[in-house]
Image (cartoon, rainbow, N blue to C red; front, side, top):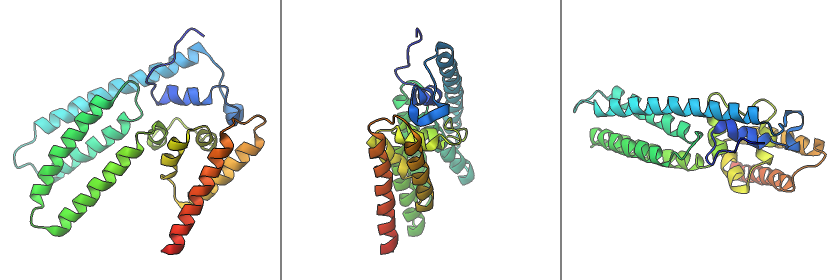
Amino acid sequence: MTISFSQFPGRHERHHRRKLDNPLFADHAEAHNDERLLEMQRLDHEELLGFIDALRNTVQRAVDLKPNEESDVILALKEQLDRLYEQSAGLADDQSGNQRAIRDLLAVIMRNVERGAAGDPQALDELEQEHAAREVHFALLEQPLVADLLHPESTIGPGELAPSLLSESEPALAATLQLFDLTQLNALYADAERCLADCVDPPPAAGERLQQIASQISRLKDLQAMN
């Protein structure tokens, strides 16, 4: 193997590496292959270039906002920034600078929205809830697997969710499990249990990840009973 892994891989290379010689993926596992790795890196690079163009265009839209811009224009810009932040979490290279820029723009836009809602306690409360939800979402995106799963064209194909989760670290799985409701988790546990049972030589930590899924199911059941 002569092609080096990226220091900050994008979602295509990341999933390729997730599947490398991984017995949990069974027939979907991949072997070390320079051409395959190079193709994944190429796809990640193209996606990065598209993101940079979209971010530049969005920043320019923010700069061009009129002092008394229509609320629907401002809200559309805010939604685009939210989407760009989510996309950035799955990209190659260090995206911390771009993410800071997006956060700064969002803060400016939200201050304008809050000024427009001044005097309306209900609207201000809803904006505060939205801010809290955004912070939780952004925190989850610190785990690349979350971004990989949320992408509209996820690299994690049918039948690959269970082995992907069983291959993750404890913090990554803890964040990812928050994406699923109780019904989905029950189905996921069954798939993960079957995946582990069918694996001839599972990774040592896979059983711990299965138990982690079971613990999350138990927590959600307790919360459901309390409500």
